[in-house]
Length: 371
Image 1 (cartoon, rainbow, N blue to C red):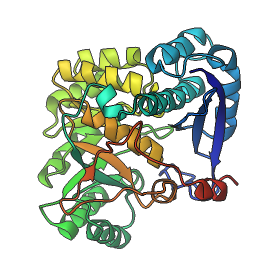
Image 2: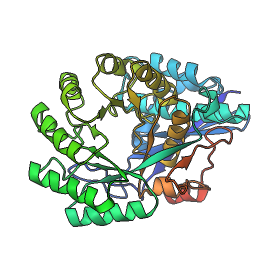
Image 3: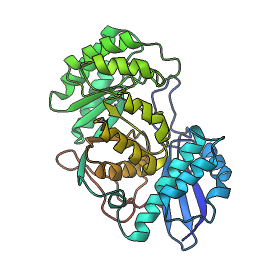
């Protein structure tokens, strides 16, 4: 079975604000789906955390390396794409596009074998996992209403991120965290993401340490991206001195980029994003490398239902996995599947057990979101 073509599906009209200073509008082009077609009619779908124009360019740049390749060898083919685009790639657009192709090839492989991806990745260590609702910070009154809304939908874990947290002063940051905790009480997990990968992040180690100490007083589960994403020395110091777990890694791509962060102990929790770090193939390697160093793995997943499905299979196949990220409310998660994901009474998601990723795209929704 050979790869015949790769289609690119633009997603606009339902884009969620990502928290950057200029914000995001629904019509912004931020996420893209790729669909790998084979000469035998079988298809597989992947998700890319890159806009459609760059995804188109990446697919065409790589065409000579994927066209007529085996559709049933995701690890070898994605590594071939990576090695063959050495000078143009090693991160950025091409690695993001390879990520989507890799996810689509795992979907294809599972469908051809009539097996779920989780089993092909090594097997099910768990059949369910808790998602955390991923939302942005806001003014205290708006934040309280948002927390109530999310918890009323059954989420038992919530991550708060980005502006205005860390953008005003320490007293306001504590007000936000206190508001969140008092709104949902002690039984819902709360996680905090400072968003240190924002351009021109102004804070350093001492701010991060003081903030970590404040967060620990409110039983916050982890402190994510408290420093700029290239400050490995700062992360190491912070992890060694902070009273709560330190998380990061969403901006890193390729397994090699994660090695020093894992081996030098920069994280308590490493967060590769399968839609840009190299796909399921690289994310799995990163997760096992972290496991061997007693570092917890939680996928970063500010993406689509396809990305969430990939994260669920990955979480199933790693011995220690506590959460998956669930962007909400998000039309590209809630509306693009024939059978959308549903939380159970315990606030958990069941990991798909149908062949491939175990999902079916809603073609009418894809037409609606193509712009």
